[in-house]
Image 1 (cartoon, rainbow, N blue to C red):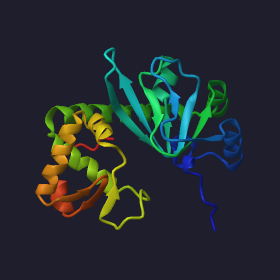
Image 2: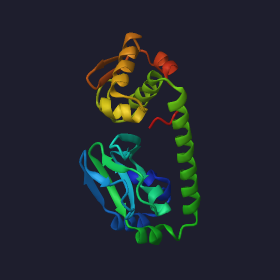
Image 3: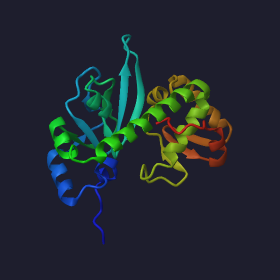
Length: 233
């Protein structure tokens, strides 16, 4: 029987490392536990390394000069975090905050280049990742411009309903991973519009909502109501 892989070994940069290399990586970047609300880094601070999320979720919050906060992205483990600031050698554009219990490793710059610098595939994998992120950002902006809040909400609900291991509820039920305020920031709208869009989907008989618990009543019709973009985090 094959040994069970660590979640981070599904990240492309670590997918093909040897057992010896993996043990070395874990020595360089031990896993730390983060609780909801813990801050990984602040907007405007210089990056001191690269984060690897084993499991959990981190929201990236951008704040303007008036103090208005917007969730621009939610990163779900396993994945990298803070890579754009790290490689651009620029201050963080957002604040990274844990949304739930998370396990995250931190790799210092010299350790990153020591570990990955010898691998010729590293630059190719990073270029591919940046290209994919750019495509998602373009889709997100287009969706904000042309899709209704209800369509964006339907897309978000479908993503939650298909997420493995989120809860132990029946197959057609799940718990929203964000508050109304967080959903509004993710979807680029207001909490009031979020509540109205949920009520609208309920009135159409597509879902039933009790607090943050949602039951999908008609997945096919919910899918038809969703926007076509696959980038709403």
